[in-house]
Structure formats: C-alpha cells, structure tokens
Image 1: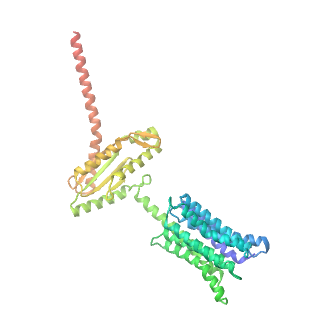
Image 2 (image 1 turned 180 degrees about the vertical axis):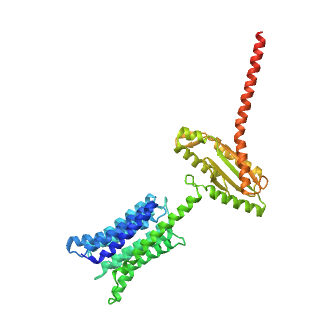
Image 3 (image 1 turned 60 degrees about the vertical axis):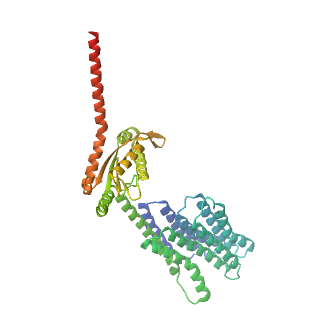
Length: 441
C-alpha cells in the first residue's frame, strides 16, 4: 500500500467536512453535486493507496482511483451548466461519464489492445457531437459546443498518441484528465463571471489543476532529474476546495442581503427597499420636475380567502397578485409588498393624475376578474389609493400618508353605498306598508 497518500486523504477529508458544514446552511442542488464530487476525490485518494498492490486488486484500485477523479470533474462541470435541467444535458453528462470510465478501464487493463483503444478513443468525439447535433433544433448553447470541441480534440489526440510505445498510455490518461479539469475551469468561468475572491480562486485552481496533467509529463520527460513532491501536484485540489467554500459563503451572504430587502414569498421589494426606492423617486422627481405617483393597493377579500381556503391558498393569491402588478408596471416603476395583503406601486415620471388613475383602473379590473389559483377560482378585488407628488404631498412620508388615506377612503366607499341602499330599501318598504295600510282602511 502507498501510505504517502494518507496525508492527502486526510487533508481532502477535512476540506470535504468543512465544505459540507458550509453547504448545510444553504443547501442547494449545486452544493449537493459539489459535495458528491469531493466525496469522489476522497475515494480517489483511498483507491490510490491500494493501486501499488499486484494483480487484480491493484488494477481495480487504479480503475476506481482514476474513474472517481474523472467523475468528480464531470460532476463539477455539470453543476455549473445553466441548462442542467434539460434532458439533453443529463444525456451529455451520462455520455461523458460512460466514455471516460470505459476508456480508463481499457487503458489500465489492456494498454496495448488497439482493437479496443481506437473505438473507445473515437467515442470521445463521436458521442458528444452526435448528441449535440441530434438535439440542435430543440436546444443550442455555446457552452455545449465548447464541451464538444474539447472532446473532439481529445479524441484526435488520443488516436495519435495512445499506441505510442513506452508512454502512450500515460499520455492518454493525462490527456483525459486535462480535458476534464480544463472543462471545469471553462464551466466555472462561465457560471461565476464576477469579481470576487471565491470566483477567482476557484477558476484559477481548476485551470492549474488541468495544467498539472501537462506540466508533470513534460518535467518527467525532459527534466527527469527534477523531483517534485506529490503535495505540489495536489495543491490545486486544495485551492479549488477553499475557493468553492468561499463561493458558497459569498452566495449565502448575497442571499441574506436579498432576503433583507425582498419579500420571501413574492420576491418583491419589501417595505425597507420600498422606502429607499420611494425616496429616490421623489428626489429624481424633484430634480427633473416630472412628478411621481404612489399607489397603495389593498386586497379586499384576502382575509376571507385565508379563513375559508387556508394560508397556503392565501400565499398563492399573494404571489398571483404580485405577478399581476409586475405585469402592469414599467421597468422604471417599483412594485413592493409593504404589508400582509398590501402592495405598493411607485410610478416614476413623467406621470399625471390621469395616468395614475388609468393604471389603478386597469389593476382593479384585473383583480375584479376571477383569479385562478391551482384548481380554484377566487374573487379578490382591490382598493387602491393614489397620491401624486408634488400635488398631494412634498415628501415621501406625507405622500405615503396621502395614498393611505385615499385607499381607506375608497375602501369605505362600498360600505357607505351599501348602507345608503339599505336605508333606501327600508324607507321604500315603510312607505309601501303605509300606503297598503291606508288602502285597507
């Protein structure tokens, strides 16, 4: 057994535990795939401890060690694909896993078997290209073509060197691993094009990881007297692990910032961000003299929906209402959820009272129509208060108060109309009764 791999195994295991601890706080599909891949890296070191053993056991350990290393790289790549849920993406991942595994098995067990090596090397280029062309009408992406280009080049290189006497098998395996981890660097660069430490460290580490499979054979061939410790070649792995932990932390920080300023249910700006947007809109209106409008929208029958159909249905109604408001707003406007069943809409100028009333009328009509929520059809309706800057108020606080008063005034209007109608009916009924009494006498 090769006990020199034990320190590397311990280091990767500790980094994997640290990674799992960070990922658990904000577990996503990406973090789950990353964690699986790091488990494969740990398996790679375990297997390589047994690789020096003679016979079948040593060959099996070599296959498992190299296959797990390539599987980790393919999982890293697939986790960074933006179209991962496409069926063709799943087929591409399965194709890469199968072709890499098949080739590694053949190279280790039959390094001189041209009848097996040539077709298995050709599959690296043929299968990804065929899959891409077959699904081209339904799906097309530059990253997919980049992967195809990498593996077609790999196929050509393998066909040229794999049967070379002496070091052909080693060059072939290094080429396979270089392609996998160069692909990781490209995919991570595409997925994390942002100026952060985590992105820079991870992308650089994957390209360094790929470079190991080029630099190491060059040194072994041309400078055999230069001895480089294994820890140096494994250093990019540790750097990549640290970088990916930083990426997870950065994503969690950004998510927390987002939650601090947005409503978790609807994804709309919350009251805090709304207040900031309102202040900005008023300031811009003050400088340009173009005016601004604030609409406060209260869902009329939301409490009844909650009480009758449950909070889950109520949540769906709020989401649907938010979608309706977003669909009516312009890019320059702000739709926010500022209360339980209260939404706010900031209309930036140039805007007039007539424009704001037109928007409010269209929103009322949309909400007066039955709202389809799952299999249920619900009637909600809305009361909308309008306040115009600077006609109704000259500050954000007073504008909000004016819109709030307008909204409650509208909310009371149907009740007042109902009371008047009841009084009228009662008066009419009394008069009829008196007339009927008079006629009997």
